[in-house]
Length: 139
Figure (spheres, one colour):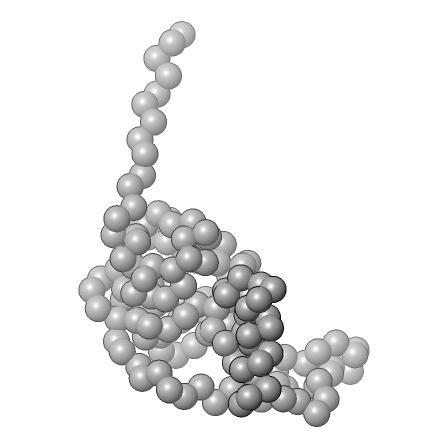
């Protein structure tokens, strides 16, 4: 635990917080596919403890949790779960914003990086306003 805390502190000095892993697992060797690439399916499942599940509250949080569960391939998403800690990354963040638009909600990737939990993102979505630009009437 001390080595992980030290590594986290060093990384936080160099990187934004959202880029620093929430969990570190020591591996003797990286599992590889027959082609020599990292085999993600063979990686051990992290034992995440310490945070209790709290169900999403309200329609927006439930919608976000459902979308996250589909995108991230997880069974259950709580209101305090972090998109990036659950396996999200920038490409999935773009997919998330597209799905939110389909559901009638406006959010951008920057908002997700700043508010990476269901509860925090839902709170910002409730206050977002879409600017209506009138049509140009000049012939």
